[in-house]
Image 1: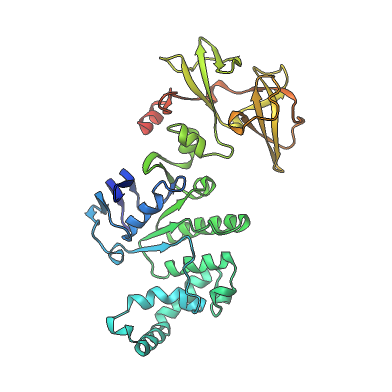
Image 2: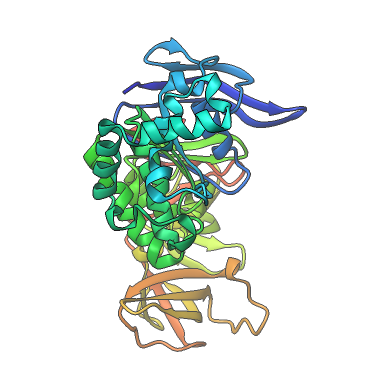
Length: 391
């Protein structure tokens, strides 16, 4: 199982650069997630790792060896596509066994009759049948081996696509948004199955997604990308608790981190709308303006006058075990034209006793505040270890 190093990797299509000087590494056996919005270059990077797209600049190393010009077969990778890409005329067994058939393919096997004989012979080899049966049992596909993809559910098709990748015992698994076509319940189930699969096979997984829930629940490390540029690399906890900039803070989390532009002096913070409250030690040094960040679960919602930030309830989303409440800072009634961008969100357990339009107040622990530089959006006033990662 190789370690992969990216040294200044870039990719251009004509005059359009989609990946810019990508520097990172994938450790042996880890589950690395490439996370970012659509169009940020994450799928292109995955295809370059697999050898399906050429590298425009920089070097990609497999265990220290330059692999830019290696074929996909030389890299020993398995690729699971966003669309299942199953052969509709083949049974599940034939779909799973297909990589083993291709591994034994010769140029004269293109002749139709010889092709049929070759496939039949390979499919009936004891070692091939044993490999297919083992993977099918592992992914609970044994009862479906004689069915065709058209009669399977979305989750079953996705398991077949995974089984087809597993049967070759590759060194690397590449997964390109494999759950995006599934409904919410199946996505949750398949997240658990893929995580369990990684723990069992102990191979390296590189997984592409725009869904931060998938990234947070599955990854050992996350690479957050935007515009073809790495925004931050870290464990899920590091990405969530110590975002490197405002993009990461807003992209990771549901609801995302609250980001409030403020001016500060001594122990007082003031928004540009004039809402003011006290804040203890820990405001940034230097300029007297910054972006104040706080996660929704770190805020406390209290009755009017019982906490330091005056606010008014604007949105209530009841989710069963918890409730998300969006508040407008200050006690003015915002009327009908309020945008969610203007709201501060609070995540609370159960059903708090507030209604739309209620005056309230917000509080937090000063140590939970996160500060960002207003012009650049970069995190400031971080602990030394976090600051080093953000540099």
